[in-house]
Amino acid sequence: MKIRYLNTMTAYFGIFKEPRGLIRLLQFLFAIFAFATACNGSSSLVIQYSSTKTAQADWSYPYNLQNSDITIAMLLSLAFAVMYVLMDRQYRNDERFPIIDLVITVIWTIFWIAGSSAWAQGVTNIRSLTSYDNVVQQFPACGSLGCSQSQSGTYANIIVSVIFGFLNFFLWACCIWFVYKETRFFKSRTAQQQPQQQNNFSNIGAPSMYPPPTAQTQMPGSMG
Image 1: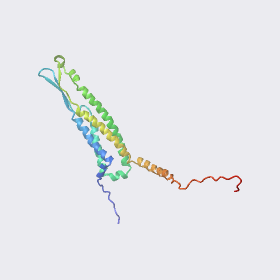
Image 2 (image 1 turned 135 degrees about the vertical axis):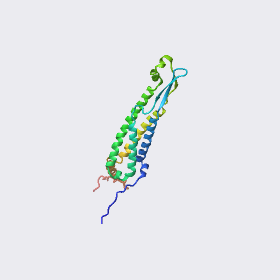
Image 3 (image 1 turned 30 degrees about the vertical axis):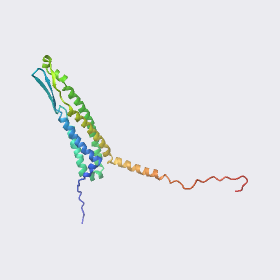
Image 4 (image 1 turned 180 degrees about the vertical axis):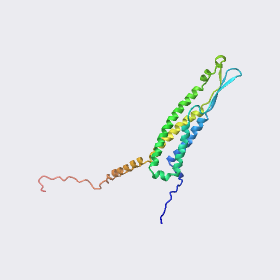
């Protein structure tokens, strides 16, 4: 009679109590906040060029910019969190999982700092292109009639999205250390350091309870 052991997949939600799982959850939430604030950055500038007439300049998402990296980052962090929950045993026993996790985490950390920096420059460009001075130059009626600013645009949401972008970079950068601790590189290094520390402590002997031997002096004229 042969006994077969079935490899059942059990969910381990305790991973969210560990830094590695908690950071993945925060990455997912902060990516949503970054995407939501970037998409809800629409505003308008109202210019009055006569006593009764006004002109309005509007801008809204996608601002001719690409935000696909943020969406992919949300799905990626969610995928890692699901893998931690459903494949915790395989992750801890198969050394390939932590290495792949580490490589992808490093790559997306670089993407976040590059994307956040580019988006910060993009927000600066949006504020410059939608400023009153720039819009007035593109409105011919202001040259002859004269214009005044009736309502200014708001940039609070897109500025907050920049902050969330750099916070996401910080979370992914922190995650590198905790994922690295799960790899065989960190574990083998720790295993090598432990015997050395034990040898160093074993060389420290207990202090002797006996006084050190004193040298015997020979008196002049004595024998022996």
